[in-house]
Image (tube, rainbow, N blue to C red; front, side, top):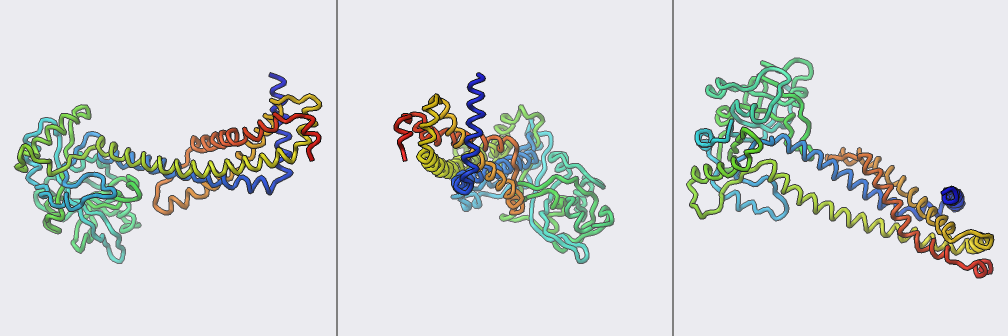
Length: 413
């Protein structure tokens, strides 16, 4: 063990000196590794950020909530919009039907959405306007920073009141409290009765509750109306998450009956819950991972070939040195270890620069609206990949050096 440790230390010293002697060549050799590692870590940064943001956004759906909608939750390439747009709108009568017939539903609420400008004086910003009943707060687990949530009286009287997100409160009321103050929502005057706690941005910064306004459902209909193109959704809160599968089956039957569907007809609605959304996202994430790994793997192969090429050059240049060391008793293992360590050091230098590039790109990626997060585990994985590339592509040149015959090596010019 002592001899092996000495050989490793001696190999590090010789390899370090060789790399330092040819600094420019070593740096140029690592360009492929730098690009590959930067691509790997940047891809992992984006995917990790997207996954974390997706889980955060998914948690806002509620593990025990089922959404009855006309459109599916995800709309990727090739989405047949016309197929779903032709479905009958979700009727608000469905809320009472589900509430009366469902054994698993503990709360039911309709939601309708539109985009409008929220304004107070000369301050204004775009907001996502949602109309719903007081059950919305219970189903979504709304927490308030100030004021109160909507009440049954607000809904029955169609009062022009609203609960606003914290970003809207900060923008329209930078100093004063917004509670019991008036704002204009799409040109309509509403009184603020509550401010929601900060929840953070949704996936890719979209659909954030912090930039939303919730009105009573009756008020929403009065101010903005409902139409075929502004169909409502129905949120159904299930008593226990263990009952989700049975609740989905039950809801399917209730909704099909309420919409008068033939027993053999395909569903003309969607039931969306966390499990189905996560399953759909997993296939998308797998495709992104596979494409990213292929491209970054290709970059690392190119970089590894460059390392192999320069190591063959290094072996040729130091053939005389190899012959002299073997003549005085150096073992094959010692020579092999020396050149392997040199290849690994070159790859580690490229890896360190590539990781540094990724750290620099992370703020740029975040500023572009793409969630990004570079955990230490990804950094450690990058250096493990560097060692693997160094061993894989440095083994052949190192083995050639280790097999050199002393007499032949000493005579090489």
